[in-house]
Length: 180
Image 1 (tube, rainbow, N blue to C red):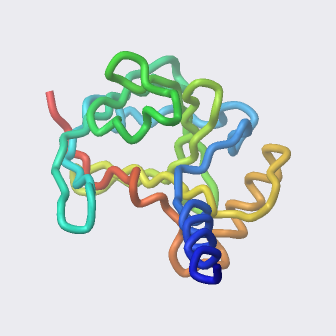
Image 2 (spheres, helix red, strand yellow):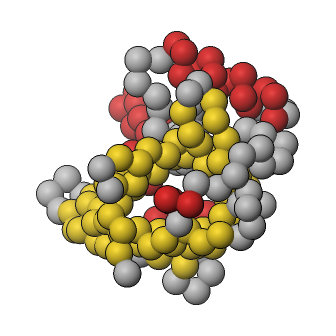
């Protein structure tokens, strides 16, 4: 009996600790406050390692396409390595599509990516011809977020009090390179 209870507890804890990207009905800003960064526009690609089990992994390509929707927003399309997103019901055909706008907080840039009515927050970094997207982990805050100002406060508190921000490593896109 004790062994069964221990196994059930382990399964429940494992499920609870499994990370997924943070999503919210609230963006960091009520509406876009800054113009798009035209250097982000274009097609970006990288290879990601997908862990299958303890001994097996495979490398798959991912492409992120950012186009100008207007002076303040991007259109976003993500193709490849999207089997992981099927369970979130955000895949249309073979692509995830949405819109995004930039926000600045704690001297960092974030994309507020709207996919199917949910906002995913991702820190973005661009240097030496590469572009990286670091989605925040679902557990970056333990507070119930009920407004845009509450989200901004939680994000600022997280970055000021953590040595390393909580990114969702399964969905990180590092060192994307511009492609045709």
